[in-house]
Length: 302
Image 1 (tube, rainbow, N blue to C red):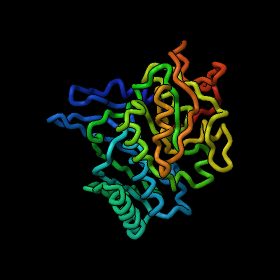
Image 2: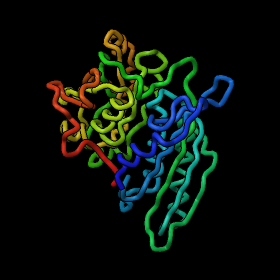
Image 3: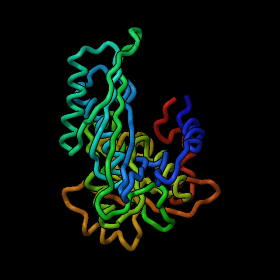
Image 4: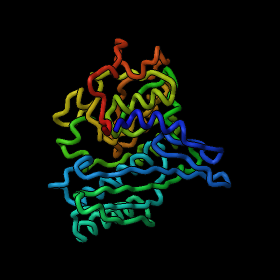
């Protein structure tokens, strides 16, 4: 399996029409449901021993991660999460484990104002051990605001990030992170940004997706990266599972953003800028070197 090749091949083939203003390729699809109303839709899955260690990870921690991964997609659009659907396929887990997992998803969802409204349970073949869970999240845009879209980056804008990056697995951050819902809505509602995505697979890999969607080059200065405890710049660039927001800001708006940013929110840091596209280069350092020529740029399913 080559995840990136499959996505580049499949996504352009998927049909869309006027009811899908934003189709596959952003953090959420945007669906026009009539009467001027829109619905945000996204889905993520959680696989034992891929997204968490099956030995030593409580079902509560795994269930909370599945929910928060999806909430992070809504946050990246500046949206409001509303409803969710859960599927869970398991082999070798007893009913107590499965109930604890599902109840955590429901309880954590309610804490974010989300209703778990349905789903499906299934057993894996007896030869399989472990679990695969998926969650579909549905949300809405905030009132009187534009959505944050990957395709909206403009040359000359600054590149910013919430929180800190790197060392997610070793620190346990990949289980304990908080989706940046309030931060995303603040950026959208106050017009500080029109472009964002959530960092799930690694800063370089995800920045490359932003660059491709917007037809630009993203410049990242590794010396500016905010680092988690015991993380180095390479961790911040490549590890993934940070679930922070990467977003752009017009330079004339950044002083007002810093002044208005609520103290209770995650910190924000400027880490680069948006450049015009150049010879297919997606992500570079301040000297123009291509970051994407590194041996590893992030996590890819293979």
